[in-house]
Image 1 (cartoon, rainbow, N blue to C red):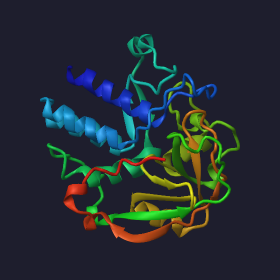
Image 2 (image 1 turned 60 degrees about the vertical axis):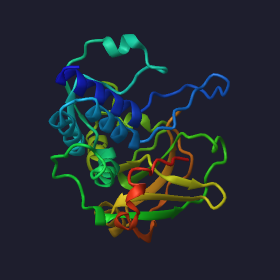
Image 3 (image 1 turned 90 degrees about the vertical axis):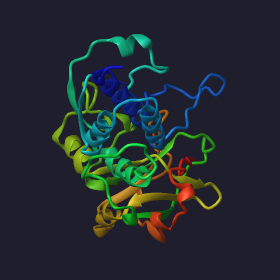
Length: 267
């Protein structure tokens, strides 16, 4: 692919991973779940480098994503399963915010940086020693479909979050997204989504890696809350509760080198 086509393809995959299309109903006999999280994006960059794509192309895409805003003709998926016609439809270039995913994406960039076969030129990557493991105990979690891999953690500022059933339109920054100043501010500074985490159904405990500065900023005040979201119908799986994450004391620098890049667990 040319550089332009490669960038569009990668942005489309990123948006498909982070903002999957809304599924109308659960039909277990026909529905195919794809339990992918953002670690797959780094595995893809690893592969593209190995097959010969230039390092500065791949580094440029990642740096743009880490800055929280991309200009692209790609859009979050609007059909499920994704129709080929949709991918071939000519769309104008559009500036879209991906800020809600930057906290996790930059955390993973720090974890994966030493494993990637190319250098990443970006000032948005935190130090590895600042990546820490956290634990959250949930209350009021629904047991409905809790054995399927369709969940993410959503950290949000309570006063910015409007009351609505589907969460997806809050993340969309295209022609189908909400455009109010409140939602734009929410996407820019009041929302973090974590896709890579482990869930204990017995203890209702979530564990995940995240950059320390983001977590400390969220826990500094009382306005941040956390909940579990489903990414099939984009409804809440748990109530929104006060953020009270516990630092387990583990840092990524304490992990054995052989474990680099294997944090792919998802509930």
